Length: 370
Image 1 (cartoon, rainbow, N blue to C red):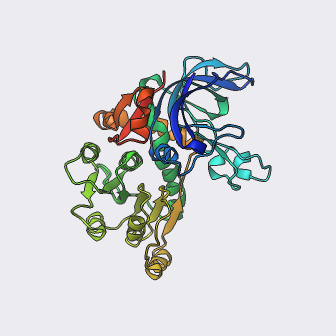
Image 2 (image 1 turned 45 degrees about the vertical axis):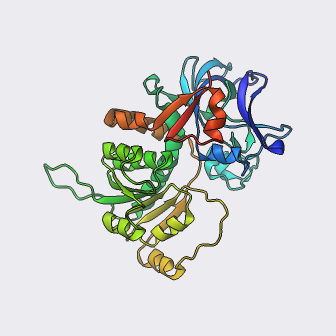
Image 3 (image 1 turned 135 degrees about the horizontal axis):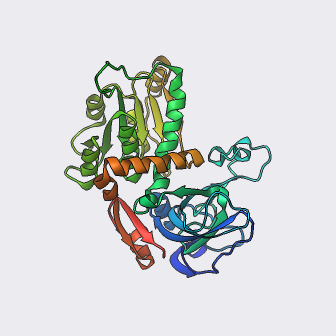
C-alpha cells in the first residue's frame, strides 16, 4: 500500500510503499483510510522540527486528523462493525503501571510523558491507505457526517478545553440570568486568538455554547475566515487595524480566552487583559524564539485578585471525541455553509509536497487516501 512519510535522517518527505497491515489480535480493527486533514503539526514534522519514527523504522508515516471505513474486524470486536465510519484517536498510553491516567484510559493526561502518538511520536500515522488498531481507539461517526468528519479531531482540542472550563467554573455562580418568556441572552464573552482551523472550530464551539465570541487574527478584512465567522454570529477583529488593547476593549470583560496561535507574545499580551473570574486556555505550542518581556507583577496580581485560571490542553480523550462528533452534527445543521467552507479542498496523494512543504493556502486542506 501507499503512505506519506518523513525520513528524518535524510530529511525526505515522500510517498512510500509498505506492507498492508493485517489483523493480529481479536480486538483489532482494519480501516480503509478515506482521507486525512493537514495541520500545522504535520507541516512542522515535514520541516523536521520534531517527529519520531517507531523503533526500528527509518521513516514515520504522518497524519493524525483522519476518517476511515471499517473493512475487517477481529473476533472479539464489539464497538464497531464492517461498513462503519470511524475517526481513530491519536495518543496511545505509556507502559508504566504507576501512571493512573493511562491506566484509566486517559492517556491525554499521561503523567510520565512516555506515551506514543500516531503520526507524531513513535507510531505510524493515518496518511496511509490502510491501518490496523485496537477497537478501543475507534470512535464511530454517523454516515451523514462523512463530508465533514475529518474536522472531528481538530475540534477535539476545543471540546477538551470546554469540558475543563465547565468543570472549573463550577467553583462560582456562572449561569446567565434569564427572564420568563424571553430567550436567554449572551452573558459570557470569549476571545479567540487566531483564525486557523483550531481557532475557527473553537469559535463555533464557543458560539454554540452561548458565548458572545470575538476572534482576533492577522488578516485584514474581507477574507474567507472572517466570512465564516460572520455566518456563525461571531465577530472578527483584524490585528491590522486594532491593537490588543482595542480588541480587549471591544470584547469587554473577557470571561474566556481560547489561544489558538502558538504566538507567545500575543498570548501574554492578552492574558493581562483577562477579566474577573476568567479562564485562559493555551492550545498552541510555540517554537523557541527570543525572550518576551512580560509584566509578571500585573499578571500575578490579576490571577490572585481576579480569581483567574490558566491551563493548557493538548490531545483528547474519548469524551472529547464523542462530544466533537455530536457538535459537528449540530454545526452542520446550524451553519451548513460555514462548516463546509472550512475545507478548502481535497487533493490526491500526489499533491502532498505542495500541501505539506509548499505554499498551499486555505483553511483546511485534505488528502484523499483511497
